Image 1 (cartoon, rainbow, N blue to C red):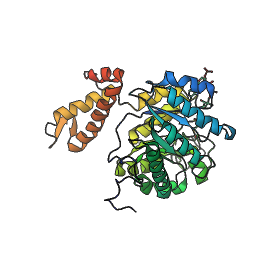
Image 2 (image 1 turned 120 degrees about the vertical axis):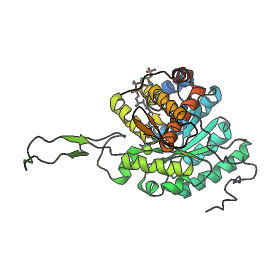
Image 3 (image 1 turned 180 degrees about the vertical axis):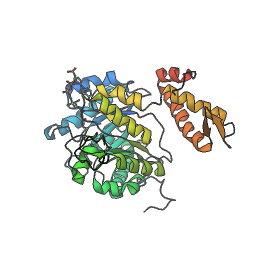
Image 4 (image 1 turned 60 degrees about the vertical axis):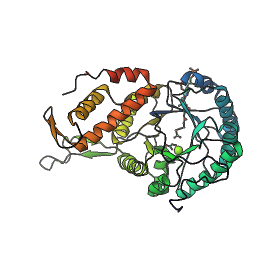
Length: 357
Ligand SMILES: CC(=O)SCCNC(=O)CCNC(=O)[C@H](O)C(C)(C)COP(=O)(O)OP(=O)(O)OC[C@H]1O[C@@H](n2cnc3c(N)ncnc32)[C@H](O)[C@@H]1OP(=O)(O)O
Ligand SMILES: O=CC(=O)O
Ligand SMILES: [Mg+2]
């Protein structure tokens, strides 16, 4: 463990000074594309400004014989594209034990490090993986003469990573956030699912039998396979001042269940999610932006609470400093999103939206 005094010192001579706070830039939607796929690559310029993050994926979903092409394609795209103020460029490198990870980092940081905001590291097992990436990034940043540190995002997709989640979040000042990787995590845990994220009809609870009739009609409700994992991830991220994200939802056609999964994550504290296909972009942006009704209500509570102490009644409900703090989360998020999203700015400006119920 590093001393608190050393924690914010660069890990290589000439590397940029680590940040003490993760920049609070909108990242509701992290849109994945394969830089070796010409059709997807051609769509990147058109996606700038419509998504918060464009992520050039080099890992799973890129065929083994296309890994070098994907890396080179990402360099080309990063150089040719103006990402503007509202879209960040991230990458997901290959796993640290793969034949490609070292070249991914070496090439990307030295060639396009000034354009790259965040490196997503898959299959992180513990703090040691983050320490390795941390030092290597510092050496490469120094070599490339970068003045701004590249941040690190870990995917939570192994049982060991889950057990070590708190130490992963706190392993480096570079840590920007965590995403849930439900597909790899399910495999690593030996869960009996065959899907990329989402629920399962077999994971349910059933009401008790009436008059002992076990064969009689009994209501069932499907349960959330990911509740424990997401909640644990959110706590670890909040404790360390970094951001939690849901990950992939593989049933591209089931936009309804996709929206449900995203909303559960949003309500539990996640700030964003991945989109794998253009159809998921709008869903993610809508779900991870608070509704106009919630913003209007939160502003009313803030106004009613005055100096923030004591208790007041509003529409028959008690409000005090704890509900005020929740409302401030919504108001601050709305204000931050309004800075980069003119449509939301206009929506939130109209605070006269009638409240539900
Ligand atoms: C478990 C994990 O690791 S998840 C993360 C890794 N997985 C990924 O990144 C998957 C990314 N997405 C994809 O590979 C694709 O969207 C697929 C394979 C799921 C579906 O692709 P397709 O069958 O081509 O979908 P579809 O025909 O609906 O595509 C419509 C158009 O959108 C394009 N498109 C599809 N996905 C994307 C994308 N992620 N970004 C940009 N454009 C895309 C297609 O190229 C196609 O273009 P065209 O109109 O010029 O022909
Ligand atoms: O990488 C994502 C996953 O679900 O696995
Ligand atoms: Mg994975």
